[in-house]
Length: 99
Image 1 (tube, one colour):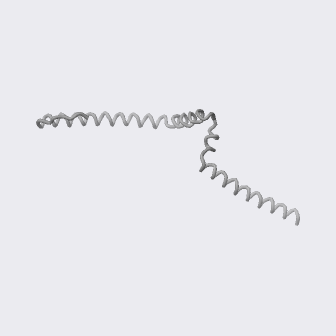
Image 2 (tube, rainbow, N blue to C red):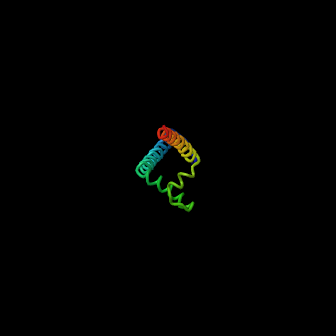
Image 3 (cartoon, rainbow, N blue to C red):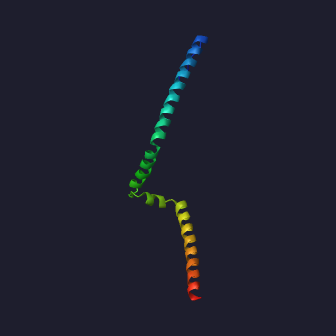
């Protein structure tokens, strides 16, 4: 921002008015950008994710999802729990058949 030489009250008021005008312009631009982001957020997100997948040579969202370590850990733990429950069910079924 360039320096203004304030000589009197009028020049101070002019400078304040100029700053207020710039503030309104910035607020309007911010409001416009926010509305654009809200209206196109889904497509922006999809484009970002799919673009990254294409750069990696994979166009699959699942491929991208499984590259996240936290997601893989969660899936692994869930699969382990399901395997234990299935094993318990099979043991109960075998016990019923044997009795």
